[in-house]
Each structure stands twice: as structure tokens, then as C-alpha cells.
Image (cartoon, rainbow, N blue to C red; front, side):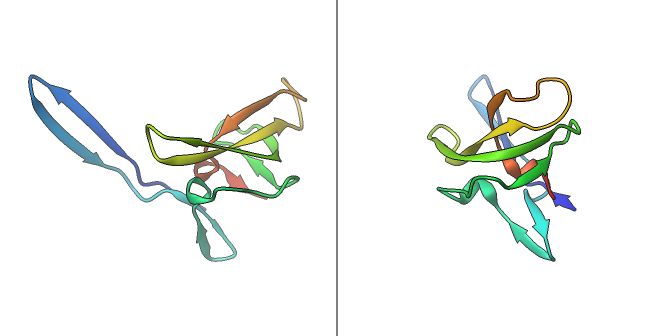
Length: 96
């Protein structure tokens, strides 16, 4: 089960509005895990992304200063793109 919280800032002619969305994180064993707040992650953890792509963590983490979140490098393990790596916010993925 995945829940999501994000804030979008919309600015137009000096007016700013914050839009609330549901809380973000992945529920694992009944516990909400916020990977975007973790400054490191173990290699070898398996996830299924929103796009149904099967990925595995490599252990590399990058801090995105503009949004104050951590993203983690994953490698595609099955199907199209197998072996490719990219940075992913795992809060939107399902832990396997």
C-alpha cells in the first residue's frame, strides 16, 4: 500500500498557492517508510514502480536540495530497459 503527500507551489502574478496531496511513503509491514527522508539505503532492495517496472536499489543515494528529498539509484531488473539505472523517489514505489 502506498500513500503520497506532496506540495505543489503555483505562482502567478505574485500569488502563491500550496496544493496538498496525500502523504507519501511506502507501507511495509504496517509501517510507513519514507525513503525520501533516508540519506542512505541498502543495495539489493526490490521495488515495483508505479509504471510496473521491477527495480532493485544499488545503494547510491543523492540529496536533491531544491526539494529537500533523497532519491535512490535503482537498476531495472526485468523487461524493457533491464540493466539501466536511474534515480527514483521510492516513496511512490511498492516494496517487494
